[in-house]
Image (cartoon, rainbow, N blue to C red; front, side, top):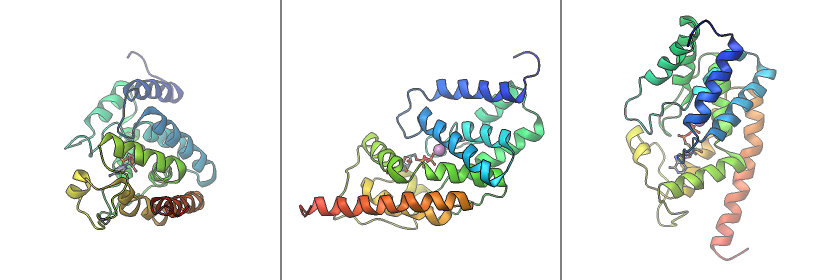
Length: 218
Ligand code: ADP
Ligand code: NI
């Protein structure tokens, strides 16, 4: 790419790149997940502040490399891309740090977001894993992995190691206890917490109804 791009152009190029890249993804990271996380992150930023350029770039790029899909991720694709569109070194290192801090690594492993930008993108990513969308994504992912919806004989496992979490073969309902229902207490920002609370309640009522229907009671 020749010449320097404005920030707006850098964001646009990144959006095009990611949109193409994730067109056919079926692992829960399709373009629309990225799209929602970007919009949610910018919406949270309206209330909470932070550098909008860093937030938007990190949100767009946050799933380009996934530790769950690639065994080792040193963010090389992300670095290469940022270099290609000539994002400055200082912004590149900030974006990389945000992305590193964003992904969840299983129930036993804490992820600490240090900057306001990382806090916001992490909140936006977590919000997309809960509520109605979160439920849909979980069953979509479970189907992709050929997992049962539910098995009353298999109890959820808390405090899994990163390896166990990656391998995970438990029914999709267990994922609610292993991850989704834990997210509301991990939110960073006030705005995120408020939204997570509502989405959490929706998942609780979904589960209630699910068990009732399972038992043929409702
Ligand atoms: P992200 O952090 O980008 O939301 P993840 O890679 O952790 O994404 O997961 C992608 C989607 O797949 C999320 O909605 C997540 O809840 C779902 N998912 C991940 N692992 C499981 C699992 N074991 N069972 C069901 N859904 C899962
Ligand atoms: Ni994500």
